[in-house]
Image 1: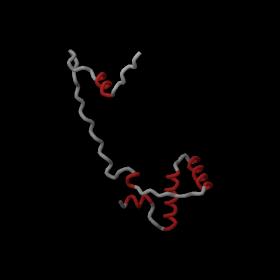
Image 2: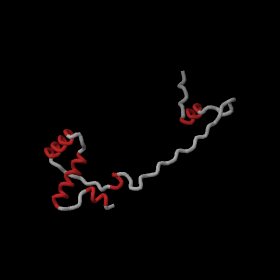
Image 3: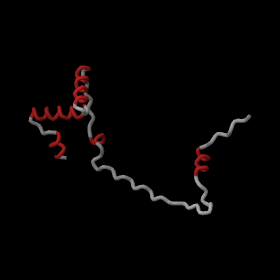
Image 4: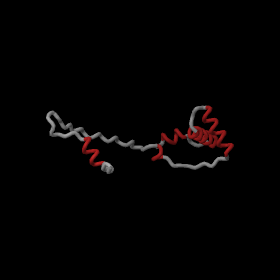
Length: 101
């Protein structure tokens, strides 16, 4: 017994498209979707600079535990820590720096 012929993508699509010469078969043209306008400022990932921080395992574990307990993300805790550092040094806070942009 011979193997059935392999299907190609073109044959699958062709069989899925309804014939237009069928009585009562109308072809409906859909308007193309309006492209979403990109955020003029871009996403945080596009705007921000990445910074790597190397932490000893016990330090990382404690930070992770605090984030879990407070139901927040480590990123938010790091921003809070930076704000406290800026405040201690008499520098502008993160919100003040973002307002000046």
